[in-house]
Amino acid sequence: MKHSNDTFIYRELYNNLKEDILSFKYDSNEKLPSKREMAQNLNVSVNSVKTAYEQLLEEGYIYTQERKGYFIEPLEKLIVEPQVTNTVTTSTHQQEQQYRYSFSHMSTDITQFPVDTWTKLMKQVFKHYSHRLSAIPDLKGPIELRQAIAKLVSYKRGIQCNAQQIVIASGTNVLLKQIMDVMDDDSKIAVENPGYFRFRDILQKTKRTTLPINLDDKGISMSAIKSGKPDLVIVTPSHQFPMGTIMPVSRRIDLLNWLTKTNGYVIEDDYDSEFKYNTDNIPSLYSFDKSDRVIYLGTFSKTLMPGLRLSYMVLPTSLVTEFEHINNNVIPDFSMINALTLYLMIKDGHYERYIKKMSHFYAAKRAKLIEQLKETFQHLIKIHDTNAGLHFIVEVKTDYSYDDIEARAVSHEIELYTINRFTVEPVHDQSAFKTLIIGFSQLKIEVIPEAVNILRKVLID
Image (cartoon, rainbow, N blue to C red; front, top):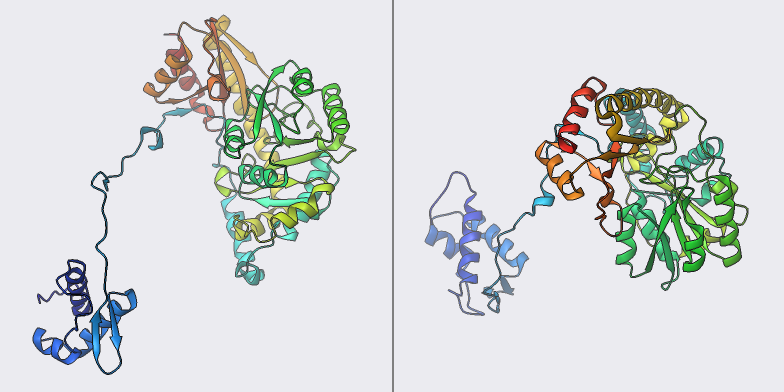
């Protein structure tokens, strides 16, 4: 046996014996040399042989008979399909694209994030809540955070609820899957079109019937809902995603009345309501509900950062018991240390101060971007400005198709999304004006002029 300075002798012996066994150089049930005999033959210590034999025994390559020694375990030859390859190919969409400038609606700016404060609070969690970190979390999340969220949504969104109605998870996608577990298998679900495509994908995988409902100037079409007769409706009333429409009170009342009459439910995805410019926050749909019909989804992805992976929902009281029963044995997937750190951040007032700071920060970016777009594109652009959220809609007059725009954006190292990302069917109209979703959170205010000039090259030049 070849000795190596890099590998323990027993490991070499183990590997050699394993290879010989798998190559069928030994017969089934053949007796191996004794430990002492093997050690003498190889000029190694008995302990090295003993350790190698014990590892082979542990993995099932050999077996022992009392006072007789070690024997080869009978093995079948492993069947290998000839067409199977071990080569892993990486599709292009999985490779991370590097962008010079991003007009993405999905990101947040974390340059202002209070890292020192977060780190300090996390240390407090380790000091005071270590017993909670070493145990399986409560199904619905730590009660402290749920109580803090109940207070937060009460004065921010007009939602009157208790901590028992709140569920914490690692994202709204996870929460939607949990809601589906509570709904009947034959439920028919209405979604906004255009709308959040990841929700549509989740619903399709659950084999539920999905009804894409077009929008009008007040949001999701009530006439289409009434004709489709869904059991559940998913809406973004405070800032429709992606079109930005704010659902007026008249449409909200109409939707809630219809749900009450049909015993249906609505999921209110309130994904970025914290950022409202020039006016007060829009009341939540949940705050209008008097019939226990609204399931409210909120997230900290927009206010803090997507990588935190903390979202929550407020269940109607009528669904709490059933939710707890169905998910009784589920282990939550969120980070307990992040959840408790967030609780301290809210409790100590750091969260509210950060939101106020970021509202002013984003408002300045947004104003600068709109000003630059108007100056650069002039009559070639229509800006649909709803004074809310981290994105807005523009229509740009261009000779390029949506496919052309998306390809040209990549070639110019610009992250840019068209309306086609959010519609059920791609838009192929020949209209001179193309609809784009313009996010601004990732843009540094000083580079906005240059970023908009490159955007013009993508769309016009």
